[in-house]
Length: 52
Image 1 (cartoon, rainbow, N blue to C red):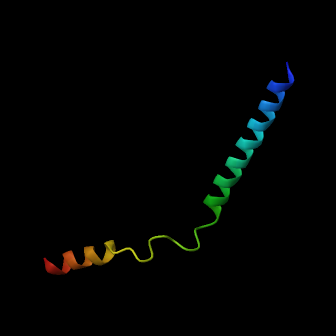
Image 2: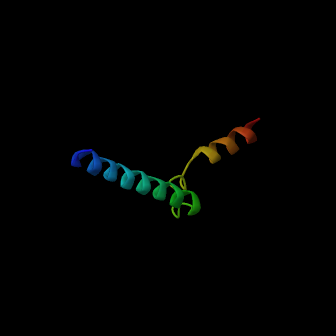
């Protein structure tokens, strides 16, 4: 094997290790500030239920 293949394989393994780590961290720790706090959808759904 030449050096380029070995270096590329090492970089690939580190990248896969990093991605798996980020993925597992996101599964274990919930998002502190959810983006849908000011979401109007629940209010609209409540209005539709009340109007029936």
